[in-house]
Image (cartoon, rainbow, N blue to C red; front, side, top):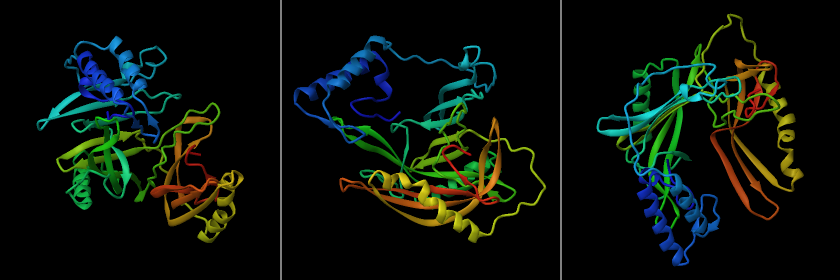
Length: 355
């Protein structure tokens, strides 16, 4: 995992000798009066980081051992209720083409817990790749052009049998670690390719919203995500989250509302959705640069294990927020939908909730 803040790292920092070495490094820095800037932009001293590592040292093993395990996928729906959720988890290391990868399978699906995943990650450069947008992070480079990486990813998806998916874009990813002064710096750069499910020739619209917000007694149901990240050496990360099983396809025709009616709904409801900005003395400007039609999985009320694919209009773009103190912040991009409308009946859908 990539390091954060005052000193978390991977590898040797998991056992005693590595932790002791890190404590010595941090104490030397503390003695100089140096500070570091954490991932939130706050300046900090090293005292808290030293205390955290000293606490870790109490429980750290002398060495980290490994053993072979059976690569068996299993699912026990009662595992969590019986207090043994680990039955549905599998994690280990795999060496392929001379490279060491971590493989993780989380298959513990219950009505109260909907996060399931399969991940394969190359940790040589820190792992934990984070999206950074349409350009590499400062201090890193990537020689392979995005179009070549997209072709590699599409071929890999075809080889793995993802016939019901198509690539739907991508962006740069970076891993981050800390230098000897505790400052967060980019360690490696890659390009990630997103894939989305296609149903009867219509793609499910991909957005960065994960759908993890819950309401009342409902558990959240994150959207399906599938992507691969490559650097110049090859594949460094594969992730597949919350896969769907598509059943009960309808033969009925779907009738969409005229788009001018969709526009009227957008004009009427968009400002209401974001009224909290003006209520909190903040100015905001939205730049909608794409309106896209596609499928979206919507949860059925009262049934957290099933949903319905419905056609929706998504409004993509960016927002610029000007706060009362004069500071501004620009967020958004090609995968940020600011408004979603059901294309059949015109209802406004909250992508965070999935309904």
